[in-house]
Structures are given as structure tokens and as C-alpha cells.
Length: 427
Image (cartoon, rainbow, N blue to C red):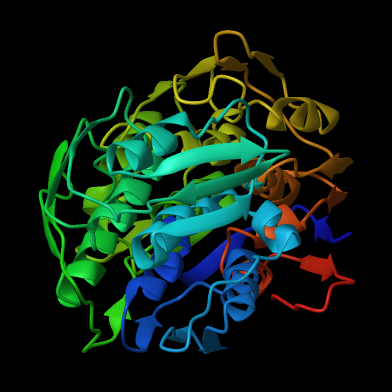
């Protein structure tokens, strides 16, 4: 059990550099097993999800080495093997091995993926895509079996609802299938463009990534020639933007892609934060008063569901009631009772996904639990704002998603430590 201990009340200042996108990285690592050559990724975030994915790679005789943000993966000696269920269940994105293994071997067997519990997130759209491409799928006692005995073939796949995970899995399965695949009502997230860029640079033929229609012409081989630099993490960027506005005396945030953050930064500007936005960095000046806002989460380019929780502590400083409606995951409210323990005036209705945040004069330290990654981010910001000591249990969930978060926060004048009994040290 990992705990994050925060001594609150310090004003923050200085500079912070955003790492590579978690949501790209967890798709790119499974995608690497489709290659016929070693691959290299740069700007890889140092997060627990990366280390767990490396454990899964090792089980298939895929060597990987991670040093100073560079991850080398050699899939040339890959073998079919039972994947470690503990690592699979530690992160939901492990389900990308379904598409990658199906594309590589035309079969795969995985235990049902784990990860954050933020309400129902079925994989029926993934299954539908695999079946449309020619695979048979069965599930027995929590284990999913996929097989395409006659190989995979191109097909037209219509996503009944926009799904980042299902879009990525369909791409991974189709990229080496025979013929042309068209994915309609595809997700448009930047991380999908990042994945397509990586695969295209190895010889894949993917067009339309970033739009709602993606066309993939299957190829026989994928060969990496260059290092792939992962895009900046827009969710980490938004988290530090909110943190800097809430208790910063001037914070410069480097390695951001402002175009990926427009729905978020527009809300911060609406609150009264005078963001100074450059091509790859954003300066957040000291801000002393905030206006209430209404936020509605939507698929990209709308407001990201992953950012509604990190913005919550900042909204508690507003002079009036702010409202969040999460249309993506209405039950994403695990942070609410924990923030109430710290004195925040906040209420939620998980049947409608509506959260009301009222002005709160001050927060106090408390013992709280990070039920999932972005809940943990909200609690971290609240703990830094609060008077006294905050202890966040299940802090491993925070370390799953935020690159070297303790080191970065302390460089900004925070006082944060981790009690960690695990063998993997992330700081």
C-alpha cells in the first residue's frame, strides 16, 4: 500500500515540464509488438503503468529497457505465452494487447482487464470490431479468447458510440489485416493520431486519424527506422494548470500542446485566470479571484472527462456555484466524498453525472483515498491547498498516471513524500 503525505499551505512557483502522454504510451507499447524490428520511444512518462506493461512484454519474451525517458522494445523474439493476470488487471489499457496480439498472431487470450473503477466501461465495441474483422470471441470465467483461424480481413466498422479504446484496438487489429478497413464514428483524440503516426512511420497505411473516419490498408510488415517521440500529456498539462492557478505565485509549464487543451484553457480563462499561452508553454500568473463556471465533458475536442476532477479544487475557490456534468462517465464521482472529508462544499448525483461545487473558504488536511488516477490528482491539489497534513492512501493510482509527480511538485516548493513498499520506486 502506497501513501502520499502532503504538508499543505505552501505557495508554489517555478517551472515544470510535462511528460509524454500516458494515454498514448499505454497504446504505443502494445503496438510495438506488431513490429518486425526493435522500436524506441522517447519522452516516455515514468509511471507505474509503463512498468506493468513491461512486465507483460517480458512474459512474451519481448525485451524492454527504460532509462531517462527512453524506452527500447525488441519484439523480434516474441513468443505466444500466457500473460500475467496481475499485471493485466492492474491497468485497463492492457486490453490493447487484444488487438495487437490478434494482429500479430491471429489469436489472443487475456484475463479481463482491470484499471480504474469509474463506472461501467464494457468492451462490447472492441469485441464487435474484432468479430467484424474475422475473429471469433468467447469469454470463460473472466478470460477472453480471440481467434481468427483464417486470418483477419478488412471490413467496415461502425462504432455505435465514440470510444477511444475501441478505435485504438480496431486500428491495432486491422493494420496487418488483409485488405482495407474503414472505421466510422471513430474517436478523434490526439493520442489516436500519435499511434497512427508511429505505425505509419513503420510502413502502415492509415489515413484519417484525428477525424471520425479512419481508413487502414493492411500491410505485411512493419519496420521501425526512427525513434518515436510521444506527444505531451494534455491531462497532466491540465492538472498542473489547475494547480498553478489554485496556489501558484507564477508557474511556467513547459512541453504543452495548446491546441490539445483549448476546451480546458478556455474554461480557466472564463474563471479569470490570465493564462499566457505560447507555442509550447503556458505561464500561469498569480490569481486571487475566480468566477464560477459550468463544465460538460464531451469526446475530444470537447472538455475531457479526465480533467473534470483535477479542476474541482480550483472551482471551490470561485465566488459562486460551479457545475460539472460528466456525460462520458456519470459515475466518476469518487473524489466527492473524499473532498468532503477535507471540508469542501461539494455534492454529486451519479445518476446524472452532475457535480455542484460551492465556494469553500478553506480546506483542512485529512486521511483520504485515491480511488482512481484523476480522483488522486484532485486530492493531491486539494491537499496542497489545505491547512495541515493530508494522507492519501492508494497513492499507487496517482503514480500510475503522473510522471515523477513527487519530484515535480517538490521542485515547485510543495512538501510531498511517498511511503512506498513496492519494488518499483517512482519519484
